[in-house]
Structure formats: C-alpha cells, structure tokens
Length: 104
Image (tube, rainbow, N blue to C red; front, side):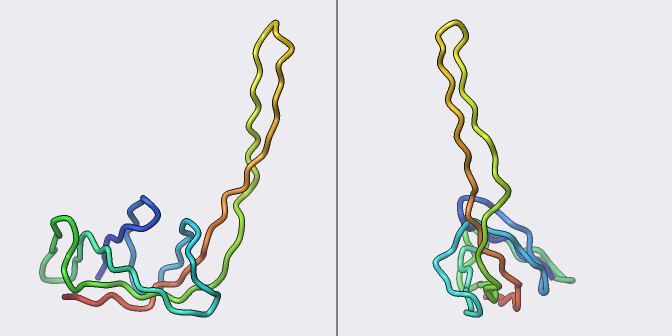
C-alpha cells in the first residue's frame, strides 16, 4: 500500500516504514506528525484519487529530527564592472519515518 502526500509544496510517494527528508516542519524530534493532504491511495485492490484531496485519509509519521542540507554556493558576477558577490545557503529539513497510512 502506498499514498501520495503533499507537504512543503512538493508531492511524495510514501509507504509504511519509509524515511523521508522533507521541508522543515514545526515539530519536535520524537513527536508524531499527521499529513492530511493525501492526493492518492493505492492498495492491492484499487487506486483512489482525490479532487484535490481524499476526505478522511491521513498518513502518520514519527519525526526523527532536523538538520541542514549541504551548502550550495551562489556566486554573482558582472563582467567589466568589478561586481562579485558570493553567498552560501543551507536548506533546513526534517527527517520523518512513516508509521501508518489510514484510508477514509
């Protein structure tokens, strides 16, 4: 059984036991988090699609912890003008483990 959930402006295909790295969530490590924006559910018999979401369906997950991704370097340069700008960015993320997928 799998579900497609929407969080942080992105869509993820999840199964029970999957570990996901998501956009930063406002949840503490060790707590439970429920995703109620379920776009699709599939099991052995059928696949159900929402319009846009499936009413009553949810995916529960346990928050493992927070972190930051690898640094990316943003370098701006304009030729013949003496303009150089170098900045870095590290995107924050939250890692979760999917516990259960609940149908409507």
